[in-house]
Length: 166
Image 1 (cartoon, rainbow, N blue to C red):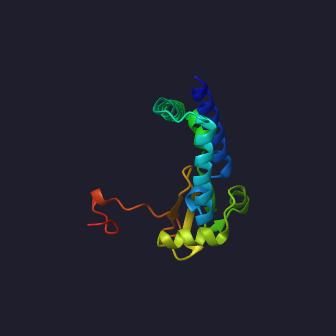
Image 2 (cartoon, rainbow, N blue to C red):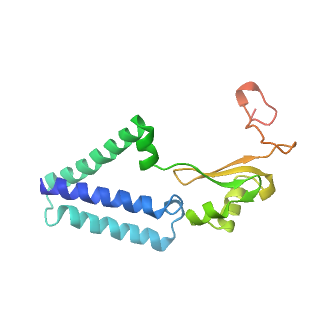
């Protein structure tokens, strides 16, 4: 039972740590941060199982962490309020081609990082973006402006749009 309690406390501590790190941090790890993550994994194992190297202890620890992950997942699925708390909400970082500095600072994002993501999305200029949104899982979504200056509707391949894949 001691392993279950320790695994539960470690799970909650890790969950809080990941939430505090921010949306973009885990998606942009440096090699050093990856090594730190591996070391943290070893420290967690020591904290959860201590000197219990039995198969039963390992199964209890893994099952407890899996149980809490499933509980949090279901809570987010069943309750929009819980989902906002557990996962977070999308945040607008570009509006009408202009960076929103307050939201960039809040998420510890820089202009070069945004520009890099735009290039990966095939967008050359900030002025071509109607909306840039940092999604709860850390990805950035861009909605391009249309030729008339408004938002460009995404292509609909099912409807046979010219811009969509054939």
